[in-house]
Each structure stands twice: as structure tokens, then as C-alpha cells.
Length: 195
Image (tube, rainbow, N blue to C red; front, side, top):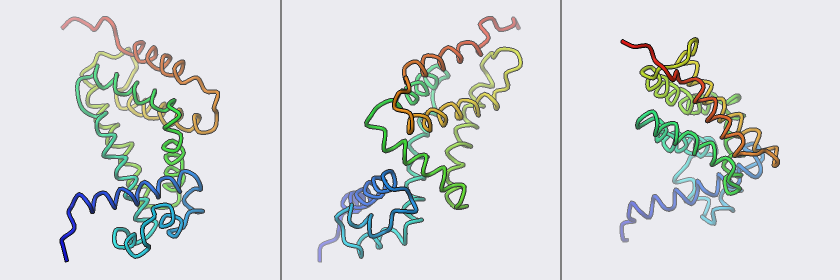
């Protein structure tokens, strides 16, 4: 019997995760069964269970992937991070992102109930918060602005945008992003003290 390539295995895993994400975004975690994921993926149940023990493992894999994808926001210069952050906010306004946004809200809800998912989801807050706070520590900020607290606020801004976008199709994404850009400009001290 020929050996299956790593690329083939990765493609099958991706197919399962994409099918699961579509089911979860559409029906939520609790209304989606493993059989729904099997049906959506077009792969046999036996093969799906070779990759994942159950639905919680599928959810954990999706949350872990999200963390890995968001790491790009934690690297680069302050200017490049701000630009990446604003682009990330803009991406929430893309109609193609609707399922991804709904899935994110589902993950937050699941994190309240499931300690394993909460631990993974916290990485999506804690790691970027730590990286952003460290980057902001060297930036002259307006009086009274704490870098760690500002990092939390920036994460909350995205979370709020994601949540509002899922239920309000009239939200003006560009106005939102422009306002956030203006707020960011206001918190950077334009005239740092001379040393």
C-alpha cells in the first residue's frame, strides 16, 4: 500500500476543519454534531475520527489556528503593527468575513462554558496583549495612558467590532476604522519630553 504524503494528510485535515468551521458558523457549536461535520466535509466518519477524537478536538484545533494566524500582529515596528491592526479591523467589514466573524463569536461563547477552549482563546488575548504592551512601552504616550491597559483596549475594540458586525449589517466599517486611527493618533504624545 503506498504511503500517503504529508501534503495529502494536511489537505484532508484542512478539509475537515473548513467543513467544521462552516457548520459552526452556520449552526453554532451545540447544534452541530460530528455527523454534520462528516456530511459537510464529504469524508467518511472513520477518516474524520482518525484526525479528531470528537467535536471538542475540532474546536480546539480551530482556536489554535486562529492564534497562529494572529501572531502576525505581534511583530514588526510600531507603525507596521498599527497598519496591520487597522487592516485587521477593516477585514471585519469584508462580506467574505461574515462566517469567520460568526465563528469567532461562537468561540467566545464556548470559552465561557469549556475550560479547554477558554485556555486556548485566552492565548488570543494574552499573547497579543503582552506583545503590544511591550511594543508600546517604548512609544511616547499621552499622559495617563498605560501601555498594558491600552493593549487591552485595542483588543476590546476589535472584539466589539466583530460582535457588532455579526448582528448589524448597517455598521459603517470604514468610519469605525477611521475613528480608531484618530484615537490612536490622539494617544501618542506628539512632543515627547527632551532627554
